[in-house]
Length: 190
Image 1 (cartoon, rainbow, N blue to C red):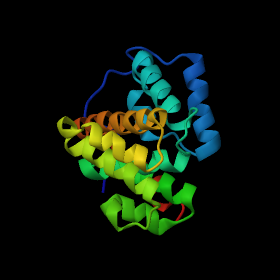
Image 2: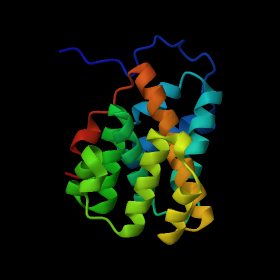
Image 3: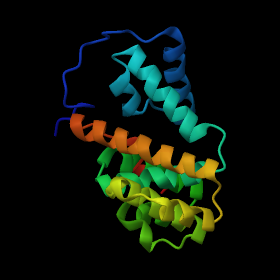
Image 4: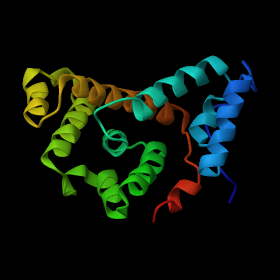
């Protein structure tokens, strides 16, 4: 069986080459993960797009927030489940397994976050992320108040919404390009 390409689009080779700093970023991925995530390879043809993606990702997923790294990954998986995004379910499902130390939680979030035994605060977070993904036009003050009632601050509600919105965008790029996950993700933290 031949290996599928990273994306189904024939992108121009190095239309806007990566900067030295961006190449170093990829080297750090190899150092920390042992591989370069295909999402980064998919953006590597254009340094401006690569910079925009990695800057937003790093801010949302690694930056200062009242949400833990695990909670942000849980949002990524829940949104990706709603959108049936193979790439993100595989990559971020692995992150949930790794950060939580619980392979069952990763699988539950991939299939149906409602089956997981979650703290009420996390359940409210994922309910909001799911609704924002499936019915964005229906989000109203009671949805935000439900998060406040679950002890999320308005600043944290912003972060929940921003992570959910980012992964909705990322899921759609993945779907449009048939982006494939790295094989390494399938066996991580199992």
